[in-house]
Length: 64
Image (cartoon, rainbow, N blue to C red; front, side, top):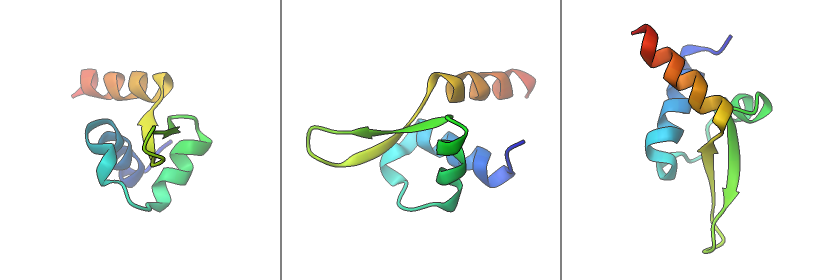
C-alpha cells in the first residue's frame, strides 16, 4: 500500500514531472515500477508514470 505522500508524488509526476526535485517518495514509486526515469534529448532526466502507475491513478479516480 502506498502512503498519502507517495500517492501525491505519483499524481505530481503525472501532472507536473518537471517540478519533482528530489523526493524520498520517488524511490518507492521507482521500486514498485509505478514511475520510470526518462532521459531527455537535452540530457535532463525526468520521472514519468508507467502504464502500471497510470492504471493505479485511473482506478483511484474511479473510486472518488
